[in-house]
Amino acid sequence: MKALLTSLAPMRTRADHSTYSAQTEGKGKSQHGRIVSELGLAIVGGELKPGDKLPPEAQLLERYEISRPVLREAVRVLVAKGLVISRQRAGAIVRPRNEWHLLDPDVLYWLIQARPQVDFVQTLLEVRQIFEPAAAALAARAATDEQLRSIATAYEGMAAAKTTAELLEPDLAFHRRIAEATGNDLLAYIGNMLSLALRESIILSSQLPNTHELSLPRHKAILTALQARDPLGARQATLVQLDETSADISSVLASDGRVNLA
Image 1 (cartoon, helix red, strand yellow):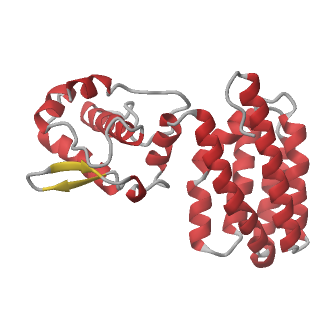
Image 2 (cartoon, rainbow, N blue to C red):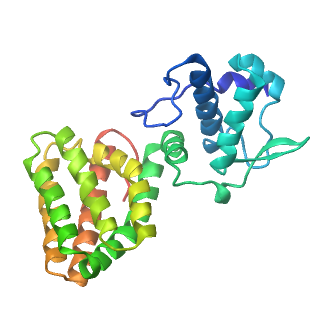
């Protein structure tokens, strides 16, 4: 257990989007955030496995130099995220992986950090290939005129971008607004929750020197099908976009000496 405590140090492999980053203002809040982030990452990263107990309260109190109420509040946060279950006398126990709230922004962020990049990207692409074509087909049927204009505005933001950094936010908005245009609140929620993971994917694919030129025609094809109220066309255009995105990311990973997705 002492080895585990020693290993619980902040890990930052990518831009820190975590709600519970160690930079929260105020010492109490900062320590609370630190313990949530470090224990959450230890769980998601497999250092603490399902069925394991969290380190004893006394050890955590000593390591983080926090009060018992602050520690217990941190554990309640992990409970709320589905990572642990707290039982009287037994303490906090890591829950099975299939019970974790994977769409929680922090849990998703820890997953991004903990998994090898190629594994995470492959997982994300599989989810996108199931979710996005169906959402686009539904949006082609259900979108209001105002929602179609909103999607078009996001595309125009992409077209106007001068740098890959400027391309990021309108690209994310384009995909979120398609999910919103389905008229299905649950699909809209899923689309919004996937934005953090999608951000990582876009940042990765943007390492290609011609990413802007490649990205625009693919998104334009989706927009055109949506505006034509063509569900099959929207589905197909989305599938093509995802296939080509997969190829782009494979090129980036291969050039960096990492495993190819294909």
